[in-house]
Length: 174
Ligand code: FEO
Image (tube, rainbow, N blue to C red; front, top):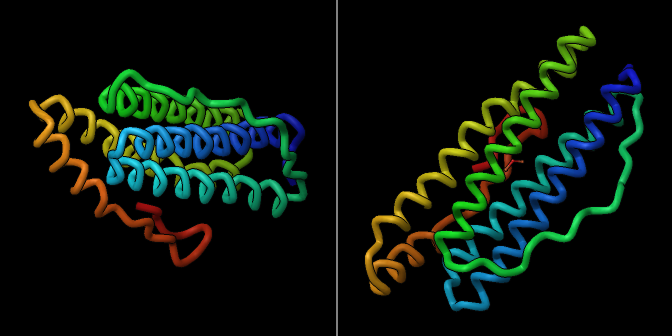
């Protein structure tokens, strides 16, 4: 059974994951608006991945005898100065999420909640990938010098597909 403090913290993270989905959907719409459909696809996959993360928190809270609470989701930005600015924002956002996950692990350990700690370890690993994949795009965008390079990168971004994990607690979303 979850204690109240942990239940509240996990519900905050559920909301943060839903915000992440909202943020990346907003970025996807931004990329659509400037005709970079590959980048829009990448962000759409990212948003779907965040919904998967949110559902993991939702399910863990409920399975542990707690109550998942749907609270208001903050409105994300809708415009960015450039594709690079949007992906730098993504990288910074993922670093913030990693800090939130680390704080949750600290709380689970302080409360001796080993089930929550085990659950959260999936996210510790996932955040390494989340930061790396965003940073990879930032670095590529910095290398791209002209419109042709950007369009080539956009074609590469169009290849991303969401691979849903086989089991809710086991696999990895790409
Ligand atoms: Fe749910 Fe991108 O971390």
